[in-house]
Length: 569
Image (tube, rainbow, N blue to C red; front, side):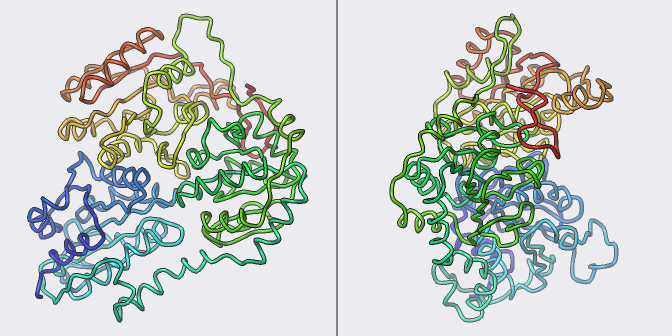
């Protein structure tokens, strides 16, 4: 059947079972938006306040649902406004397909109005990108893009479509997703596109070696990384931890891959890791890291990291093996499959003496709660006490991000949505919108700081328009808190340009957008306001006043041994 390129694009989204697109229209993508209206009963479009908000929303949708997120933008500044969102998804292996449209074929390369080489710009921050010049190529490219986004190690893919290709016509036949690999030329394309999937077949001998290493270990430690969350391998990881009776340290991206309430959970590892996790890493004789790339926030000093242990890395991406930390053994493969095969080779074990040692150290920071000022721990405690246990938490970046990662207990993958690798201030509200769209029955909290919230508060308009009852909790210390912490500890208390002694009044801002809010400075006020927010049925802002001098504890400086705490628990 003959169809325009724009219609073929929409039909291909149907093939992929896409039900939601986040985006912002403009001149070059108008053919697509014109066609999108005819699919309004099948594909919902969420119009955000800014393209970056759309990118983060598609990302939050993907992380919380496990599906591929989809984002639309126009050419030029519309496309470049996606760049931070693309990089955020890339660094955290989030599967999002970004669709931009460019100027007409005859205007490409002529510095035309709102023309930009978005494929060149995005090349280092996508798994792959494409530029479509003919309607006849549309279907194959879209199918390949989705296969790449979800296949192997997930990640973002960008499709840039020249405007002529959206207006031109070509033959199209609807092809369900499960038939793609058998479709002639497309099948060949998908074989190349999904070559990373071959890494999902781990080497049996490598698994045997690891099983023997675990049997020989007296002090094993597991690290739950983001690959456990992305691979939805939480059940297999938990079975392994409990079978071998090993303490578990979690990276920030691994939160939800292993239940924080499990007795084997030792807490966060790394720069702001717990005493228990960091001391265990320094003392273990076997470290098995699953889906963890050993970033500089985890392995602060690679030379001394777990130097008494044999280090084993399990990762789907061969490029991550030995990139940051040299391993004694590794397995390339999908976490879910590797852990399942490993479980079959092992028998139950006990390591009580080792566990007694690890858990003799603190897994929770103790704060002075005697004053009358609201503290981060009090805020966290109220949230944990009042909100449903399955509440999804989307954060921005800074001290608040660490507090809710350290002290909340996440139960499932996608419950914590945060920018780990790229550290994107302004990520949270867009991500919360995407999470709420994808999980309408769940409570969604947007946890932020007063610095981060200034960067994304325009998306309150999106929250209000679509009647999304997202609760924003601002840890308001009138400063760029994490930067101030570094200035206090490392830069001689010279607080250069970090004090935020300026507007807006966040409660008035909420009301300007048609929402409600309250400023709170005590536990009683916080609890009363949060209960009101949960029952009101619309968006709500809690502006929580805390001290400028609150710190994330513990802290190990970058480049130091993992037990070199300069701020303790």
